[in-house]
Amino acid sequence: MSNRSTARRASMIFLAIMALAGCSRGSERQAAATGSTVNVYAATGPNDLSATAKTALSRIYVPNIGSNDVYVIDPATLKVVDHYPVGANPQHVVPSWDLKTLWVTGSAGRHSPGSLTAIDPTTGKVTRTMSVDDAYNMYFTPDGSYAVVVAEERRTLEYRDPQTMKVDGELTIRPCEGLNHADYSPDGRYAIFTCEFSGGLVKVDVAGRKVLGYLHLAKGGMPQDIRTSPDGKTFYVANMMADGVEMIDGDSFKEIGFIPTGVGAHGIYPSRDGKKLYVANRGSHQIAGPPHGPGSVSVIDFATNKVEHTWPVPGGGSPDMGNVSLDGSRIWLAGRYDDVVYSVDTSNGHIDTIPVGHTPHGVAVWPQPGTHSLGHTGIMR
Image 1 (cartoon, rainbow, N blue to C red):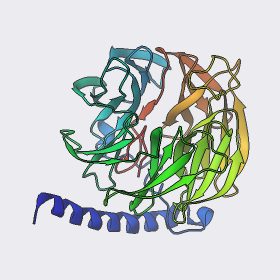
Image 2 (cartoon, rainbow, N blue to C red; image 1 turned 180 degrees about the horizontal axis):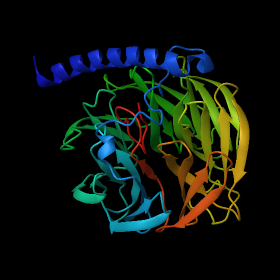
Image 3 (tube, rainbow, N blue to C red; image 1 turned 45 degrees about the vertical axis):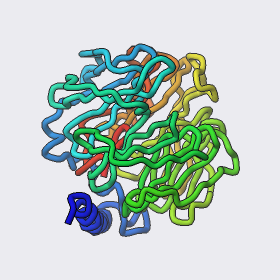
Image 4 (tube, rainbow, N blue to C red; image 1 turned 30 degrees about the vertical axis):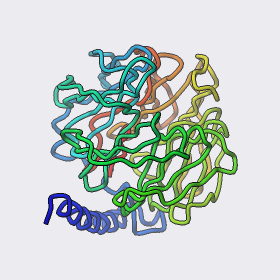
């Protein structure tokens, strides 16, 4: 049997085990809240730090598109403790599937190629940089066999070896302009990607490397970040032009609802207990918006799909992308148009602001709980 065949067989076994594990742990923690025995966030509670993640420094990693560098913040002091240059247009800091590396994804610019820069989370330092044609974002297949580089400009998913980053194959998705962000079904069989500039979504068979369907949103707009509900049945999609969150039934691939949140809905992140969804409203409909806009953070209750709170940024701002802290007490977000990072207290919405480089984007909060990462700024399972 070939190595690839072995890997695929291992993948099937892995997914079956993870599905059973998710059912068991979900029933213990949140089945009553979700009405389902499946809970995709069952392994991501505040006490679920893996042995590998325990060796990492507690840091916030901030990629700055405009200044081509990464700022490093100590969350205990709210101070910048390091910064260093990386490749052009650094978009996101992505935890690897095995949690041993943080990858800075750099997208192709007008005069420069893309890149991947590896950071060792135990030291917070860069270990290597490699040229990659267009690495806007990156995900991992649920079994960890492949890294999936999102080449936004080329509208292509590149399947690469997760260690060497050697290309194994590609899936080009031409109708999806602005191929962008994704999340997976509970069994890992499919992923749904957002198509930022064509107002829709694309559903992809992950292992089969083929398109399963396209969905043009009724409101059109600019779909951005995407996350599943705890039971994995509903995908929540931030729509920047529609100022809210689209609700999509993943299996039928149909729209089932819309939740208004705030101007420029962009990044979305589940709370540490898996009961809430935080929505970063960027405060503008523009790709390069002005500073001090009407930015805010909304809190959606998964059980009711209602907005419980909306916390405006004092003096205006532009909350973008990031993640929730290990203990769930803070959510860290880039202030895209204001050259800052926001640390938001999830108990009352109080916001601390830390100056960073120019045009910060996909902030990684590390370490994160969970057994493995599916990519982006930390989609943990």
